[in-house]
Image 1 (tube, one colour):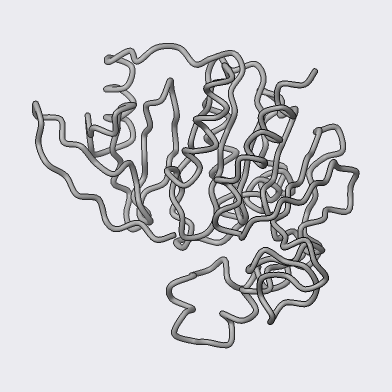
Image 2: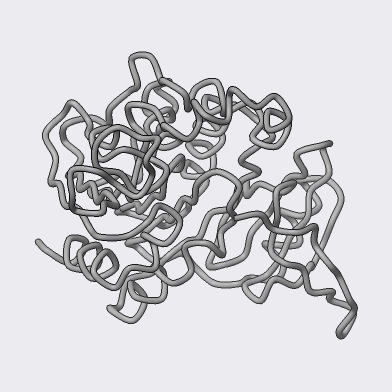
Length: 281
């Protein structure tokens, strides 16, 4: 899923944006407001919960504006939603809606997926979590490469001691590599589009697992037959990632849903599984 560059127009001197496409990454989140950094330079902007640009310039200027606007306190329990390659925060909005309808508070995190490697994305995600004031318990829902970003944050020992991450749901995580990435690697014209993550996605050597004290559930997209949606992938698959490529080495809950990779996050069954898992004691 590819988003187009932001289109701004003025309404009450607070221009609306698309909330961050492939050039903006969230570095600070507070009650739905976000400070974002441009991937091409050190330019920052503050956008509110309605995706209106409130301030821009330095991080300090944006943080000062955030404090003066007083958007509210963070919830004590927060669900992080981390999208995958070539997507944006909007990609997981249907999942967030299901969770919010169940009374859970969600933070849809945006990051410029193609503009840095997975280690960098992991480090930046950990830094954002460290700035979550007032959050006592954290859970996460990831899609595709978002799961690898989360794992890399822990592998580099950047994840803060608080808030504690308790439950994680990974949708179609390519923990053992993505078959489609190996196909992309053979087409040089696609390298600039996918960017630095392409090398790691082909076959992540010693792909890190989350610590065992985190309750983990993996939901893989599948056709439910010996052969999957993509004839170029061995075994069952979601058209992009083979079912066997989603399995971590550590203990975990595991389910398959008949759905293709991109649309797994819209699956009613996957959304209900995720909701019930996060609400369970």
